[in-house]
Length: 71
Image 1 (cartoon, rainbow, N blue to C red):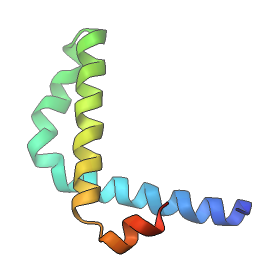
Image 2 (image 1 turned 90 degrees about the vertical axis):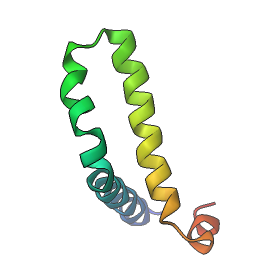
Image 3 (image 1 turned 60 degrees about the vertical axis):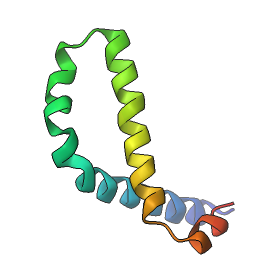
Image 4 (image 1 turned 135 degrees about the vertical axis):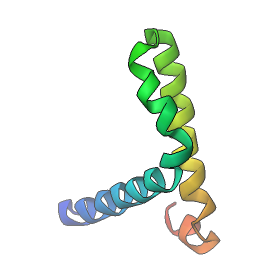
């Protein structure tokens, strides 16, 4: 993979993360604002849950063909 191809791939990934975050933001907004008052352990667990929600949103809107092309 060339440097330019890597940039294109990462730009695609970043855009998917941003639109997935937008799609779940209403559901997660209150919890996101509460995160600073959590313990470090709670923040880590929350971050894992949030990243899983973002990934779930991305995969739910990605076709089987697109998923296969990511391999």
